[in-house]
Image: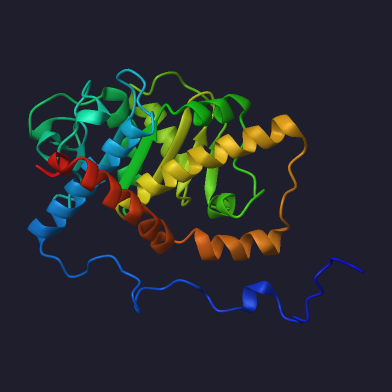
Length: 274
């Protein structure tokens, strides 16, 4: 008896309905119609929670790593974690607002120069990007040292299928504008990138979404490296990977996937919201 499941479908996977998970019927959706102050509060709270999660997952590496969220009123300015502060200690009140020239205009602390040039050029090139994440995570650095992209070898990895870039150059620590410009250009219109010899970079339409993609991408790098060490991973065909990406790689999927992590970290560390 054959164990092969024969499909009776004659149409392409891509002809199926656009999404299996949508807001409504008990499924939450992103807040809409907020005024400037409430939107700013939401973005800062998600940013602080995201940084705490990065600390919890061990993404901190000395003073390296940064995450930004665009201010909803001053579109060329962004909120970021202050230089040298541990991810594990970040609170909303610790965040600093930085302008397009790299000057701190609100909050106390200094800005990571490399972080400023990466994020300022990215936010400038991509008006649609609200938040961006970059840390020196272990598996992200390992994958980057091989100059490899995330391969569509499992469902979770397809969230990045044809939706992340490989920046196949390393210009040294990004403490100058040209490296930030090259990274932004390499990213293009994708939501994430593997920075060769450096690490991972993700973006999102909210801080929570950008954080989720970073966490997911780091896990995908870990799984891929493990699979490569054990043998030759089997990649999905283009149609299947594209269909799966549509289901698990949307902005809404990223926002929704962050919800349990938000609940966990704010319950564990309610002081981060102060």
